[in-house]
Image (cartoon, rainbow, N blue to C red; front, side, top):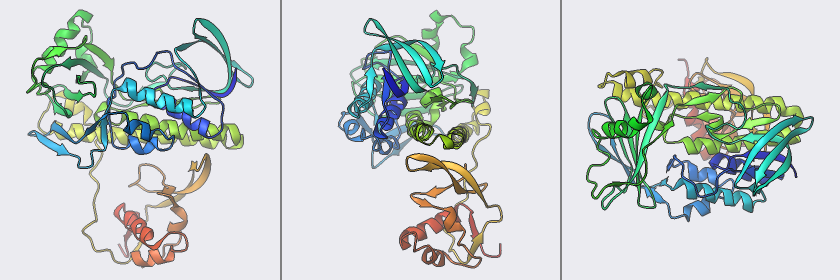
Length: 459
């Protein structure tokens, strides 16, 4: 069997990558060693997941999957408990085995050839790609692929080159059943750990404790259960619960954030946790995994169909993952810093290093004449333009996490080039009206002012 791309691992990143590549017209084989549904952490999905799934057409099936919506979260992170309410209930609580199965079936619907359960037993580089020996259904098959994608999460199928992007962290967790269990998530800061309770659609409740890896170093496996219960006891994750019974063993897993320094190569790419793992405090690991898959599909499409742009495509992917890692590390550190103000234990103090600064808002300032910030630079960078990566003019400014080529669907560098000192925001909107609708132009100009890319004239 010969394909353009072989994807190993059918989690959210692998299935999304395979599905998007099939949409782009490529022959794709997806290999998954486990039968579905299978258990997996990452059961609380941030609101940004559903819009991303629209790209591959998986959103409707996920919304019809019977998963629980997140209406509120009980948070005890600062000096007292509070209820954070989402009136739109855009987050989801999912059974990951079922969620992953839905994404896999969508990939199959789009024409992806799926081998499951199957395992890559041997791989070898050839002149035109890869030769893979795959064990499936009791037989060994040979698969040839031009490109190989690793979507195996923390269990790499290609040798990894990972650098920690935060303190080494371990998650201890166990599932519960009972007569009275929480129906919405709980998050809590403890003296030397933080806690996360996740009620699931099947009626079970997952309790997680995140601790520094050094706390468990040298402990015997038989002590894991005792350590978990001693850590969980001071928290409020089980408050109000009745008829509790643990529904399985206590488990431990690595929860350290990291970035793979070689996330893309001549014939390979890593997506999802195989390339980038976030601090679980962000609660957006699945969302980021899907983002890397959608970006990775465009990178591979460029490598296959516009090989002259391969270097630009790979540079874009490396930089976008580096920027995402740095951005999320700063956000997580800011949340740790909130607790470190009144809890001075090393767990919080160490993780607060590098906290992202609070942005300065200008919403209450009446805008007058403006000019471009002297700190602004126009640069040429690779970025996604449609189905390919191309070198495009972009903005570089200290207020931006990475060079900015587009605001929504609008290329921003050509707009900025038309800014003249002393123009007002309505002046800019009118000047851009041949490219951008007037109302959208006003919004873009206000956004640029808010970020400090436009500054008051004469300042």
